[in-house]
Image (cartoon, rainbow, N blue to C red; front, top):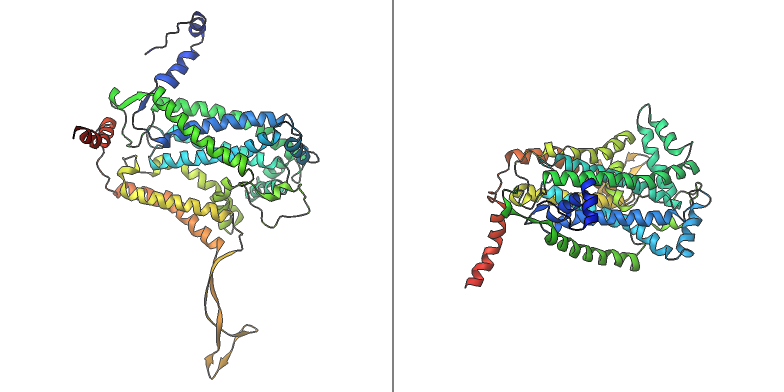
Amino acid sequence: MSFEPKNSAVKWVEERLPIMGMLHHALYEYPTPKNLSYWWTFGSLAGVMLVVQIVSGIVLAMHYTPHVDLAFESVEHIMRDVNYGWLLRYMHANGASMFFIVVYLHMFRGLYYGSYKAPRELLWWLGLIIFVLMMATAFMGYVLPWGQMSFWGATVITNLFSAIPIVGESIVSWLWGGFSVDNPTLNRFFSLHYLLPFVIVGIVILHIWALHTSGSNNPTGVEIKDKQDSIPFHPYYTVKDLFGLAIFLIIFSAFLFYAPNYMGHPDNYIPANPLVTPAHIVPEWYFLPFYAILRAVPDKLGGVLLMFGAIAVLFALPWLDKSRIRSARFRPIFKQLFWVFGAVCVGLTYMGGQSADGNIAEIHGMVPVMIDGIAQMKDGVPLMEEGVTFAVTNVLVARILTVYYFLHLLVLLPVIGLFEKPRPLPASISEDVLSKTSPVKEADNA
């Protein structure tokens, strides 16, 4: 159905720039699978949070001073003196966490329902590029308040690039703008933090374009076969998305007004001091899985490669997963291992926030009595005493979880796809929908 404007002014514009017709097709008549669940609302929620971050960030930038001597005080000025500055600052800080929560759920939904499979490989890639840009933007934004964790987080993370052979030191010097994290670093990060969200907007437009080209995936993984399998996006999914948005805003508001610092770090309310190192340097929670992978490897270069490899391997998923079936609903083995993989990712997040030298548990047993490194004997029998024989450390657990992360993606996923026997797929989306509603119809008839 083509868009035919009734207003003469709109018609005049449409003849010269058919933007209204494009929006009408994308937001109104776009044919969408009729069986989409609320898991598909996270894409629109991510778009809402991107707008929230850009608008709140622009206003905050009007009052922020990117200078090492004034940055911390300018943030305090925003919190105390600017009208509703506290609200804008908390909205932006908590909005970053909410943005990542929505995107992580959006990505795991794609993993569960196989949304990375053909013909949606490019759609998946564009989503991952958005994710990488989000991480870069969030990291640079975390540096801007110029608190203790901002300064030392920037120092630790940027130093990682020095592990790259030959060019590593040059990259670090370029990022710093000198020989340490200082005013040039803060200025560069502020500039890029302001710019990258608009780059993300451009990639999001391409992401939506790719989505409308290949069509939306759905819980069955079966493609739309005829008009009976689809419904217009408006009003069916606009109403559903608005309901999901209302629930999300309630949760967002609960953090914003009642626990605004829950997902932050208290050390960042202390001005940056290069002479005082915090006891435990940790990034924001949404970086913790990758931080745990980084610390799990004893070699610096190996840790950096694995940390970036944890994201890079996701780009290869369309070819690593050999199964012809998309949805985990019809893949019993994959479905079980998917939840194991999700638990591993949660475990990595937890381990990333723990001290590297901490112990989770200690296994006690009898050990020989040692004096100056020599085991003591009595009547030819070693003297024994109670002692710790094995300690389960945070690093050990992180290494086990890291091994499984890559084992799942690089080994288990291809093997399962080749040998798993899936359940039979429905012939069409309509058949799947009707099979769920038929018991209700039978009850009505009775």
